Picture 1 (cartoon, rainbow, N blue to C red):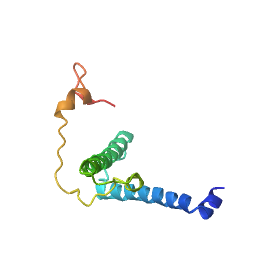
Picture 2: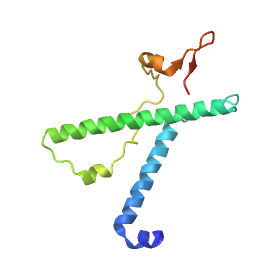
Picture 3: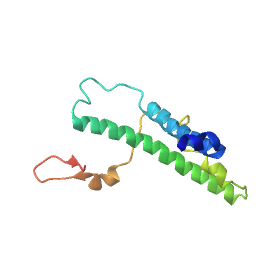
Picture 4: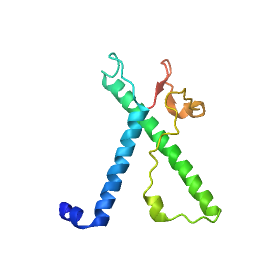
Length: 131
């Protein structure tokens, strides 16, 4: 049924291609976020693999969230200025662009204000991250 719909219905085929392109855009972003190598002594234990994978996903999601917020601001400004923005057009754009992101610079995230929520302190032991 899927193949029949795919071949026979132009709008359905176009929608599938849009979804596939969006997924590939996210994969390109993930490759841009992480282009290095994991040192041989890293990533062997399960907790190290989880930390590496989680950090990679977090950075990818930060870029997606930033782009989404900026795109929303631009759309709202256009609407406020009386410039019409079609919902059909908005539906087709995605937040996975990254040419404006410097992945090689030093990044600083102000997590100090969230430290109490992120770190559990156990009496007599070093602080550990909440999992």
